[in-house]
Amino acid sequence: MAQAGASALTSHYRRLQGSWKVSSSTQYQRLVVPNGNASQPFHRWFHLKEAYSSQLLSQLMADSSYVPNENLAVFDPYSGSGTTLLSALDMATNHGIPAQVKGVERNPFLWELSRAKVYGRICGREAAKAFDVALDSVADAFHSSSRESLPIPDQSTLQNEAYFPRQNVRDLVAIRSSIDSCTDGEVRSLLRICLAAAVEGCGRLRRDGRALRFAPNRQPKDAWSSFSERAGAVLQDLLLTEPIESSGEVFFGDGREGVNETAVFDWIVFSPPYPNNIDYTEVYKTEAWMLGCYETPAEMRAQRQLTVRSHPSIRFNQDYAFLASDVSREVQSAIDPILESVPDDRYSSGRVELIKGYTDDMLLTLQKCRQNISPDGHLAFIVGNSAHGAGDDSFVIAADVLMGTLAELAGWRVEEVRVARQLSRRTSDNEFLRESVVLLRPA
Ligand SMILES: C[S@@+](CC[C@H](N)C(=O)[O-])C[C@H]1O[C@@H](n2cnc3c(N)ncnc32)[C@H](O)[C@@H]1O
Image (cartoon, rainbow, N blue to C red; front, side, top):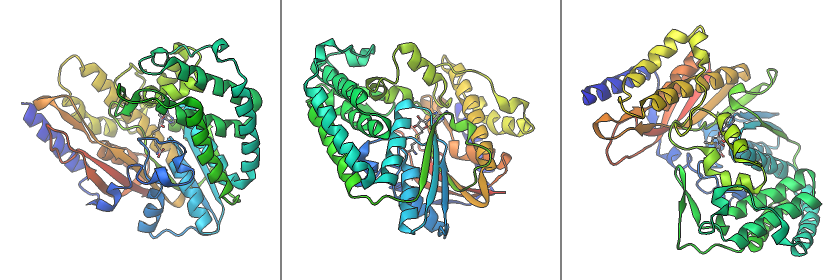
């Protein structure tokens, strides 16, 4: 019975992608992960495990025989660490033209990160002097501060001394307080990013898939040395970078809503949260708390509710705009076979809500993006499919096929699905368990 369901779902996905060009590309295998970013100026400021490579955008453009001329306008509704925006600024600079890059990010820490990187990349050495002066003041303030009087964030992970030695948490808080008291504007953000990048190394937790895992044998680093090391790398990147004519903005908002209606982009490139178990609010919570983005657990819960409905770890709202839209029937027939594959167990309502919520959120994203693409523009999204459930009852959510189908309903044409890699799971070798780059053009 379960196997018949799985093969019906596979046939459904095959049917949906039947008229598209589907290719496999080993070249993209290394581009859908943050390969090489740790050694690239600006990209190296913070390791976002779920980022893609700084080389992805240039490869996409080369493979589409696209050569920017006069100007390059690029948008990323799920900007994360800002890879798309930084890569676009690099591309435009290499072609000797200005770029206008815009992004949206919902996570307060990642928003500040991508904004700071865009600012640093555009201003380059013009920002270096102010950064260096501010760093000296922060050092003075930190070394003369009395750490004991500062409140520790009201967050259980940071308060757990097995995870973070108390001295390190006090020092990190003192660095933040020194930054916030003696700096302002964009330079403050640059310094706060150095602090965030120091957090993980100061504890015994490592990011692993959907969770922060305890690594008892890890030796936590000293907070001030880690922060200074990060600040040294930022200063070096600023000093070595010529200021450029380009402009960039990252909005603290909702990628599903797009940007203002008059913007027109040559390229929209993004990777939304995948419909799996990764909850970005959770995975990057220690950085966000350390930066003071949340004052109370309720504030963190409220921000999590505003994110894409991509994981079943919390109950999101169950408003599905597609139900009242003029494509409701088509959307429903795209998701019915997936919904029918959900095993009837205690996770079933969470999974049904995930499928409907994700579908709704991605349809809206693709509709909004369609309003802002130039007539000969390009959109590329990178997404991973995932297996849910166990054994014979497991089923795959093929996000690439689902989103391609939604894209067609939103006025796009699927130009190609480039399968970057097959994803293995011990119990499944389903052909749709894969990560893809999907290329769209306005229909
Ligand atoms: C896969 S990551 C993007 C990584 C990015 N491409 C990079 O290379 O750094 C997805 C991002 O979507 C963000 N996100 C989740 N819900 C959002 C929403 N409603 N609006 C905007 N961003 C959101 C997450 O915080 C996360 O940063």
